[in-house]
Amino acid sequence: MATVYNRIAIFSGTSEGYELALFLKKSGNLDKADFYVATDYGETTFTDLENVNVIQGRLTEKDMAKVFSEKKYSLVIDSTHPYADIVTANIKAACDETEVEYIRLLRAEEPVPKGVTLVENIEEAARALDKMEGKFLLTTGAKELKKYSKIRDFSQRAVARVLPSHMSLDNCEEAGVQSKYIIGMQGPFTREMNIATMEQFGLDILVTKSTGRAGGFAEKTALAKEGYRVLVIGRPAQESGLSIEEVKERLGNL
Image (cartoon, rainbow, N blue to C red; front, side, top):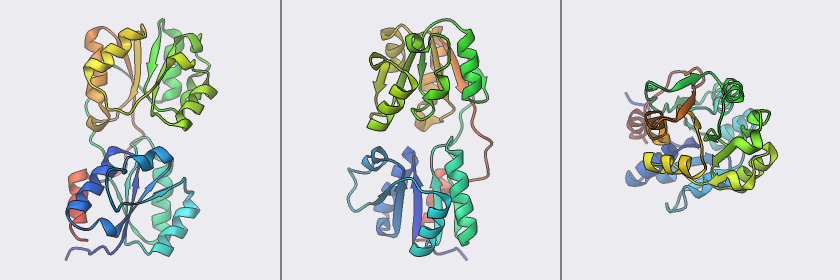
């Protein structure tokens, strides 16, 4: 017999969170879900949907456990970014502590095409960039920009494409990215737009993460065929989880 969920929490940091909100709205169950986002910008992704209960703010594992108990959730869905491994660990631990069912929504990973260099983490990407010549486009998120800041001639070579938020701009400034080299835009971006960006700023290298189709991964790695160097930072070790279609099937039990 299928489990019936009375009230659920959805941690949203990706386009999948918005897609789940649309699904629940169409099925008439939007009022049974609370959506948790870390930033003001995350909250704005739901502005075109009415009657969505969005709770904004960063929560510790202890905060999460308290909220889960107080709200009496029967299910928690983690649809945060594939690289938000610390947040995922906190959500999972809080669910274990409060004995609430946990589901990790896993974004489908696309294969890394030929001509693309795969690295393990940002630190390895930074070491590679330090040895390479030319300007580079960083599309790996604003929060970790500072990890690149010791690269040779960083301020002259680095262009950062980040979400258009005050926090992103602060992160860019702290890392030492020049204001003229900051692109504040919401993706995903087309192949043509990626090429135009590379041409406009005279870039030679693009650095990205394995963000899947929703993150425009194929459109970014396609630059390798245009003669650009592309570095891809691999995902953290993946735990078990469900696809978005499988999660929607579960939500049919609301």
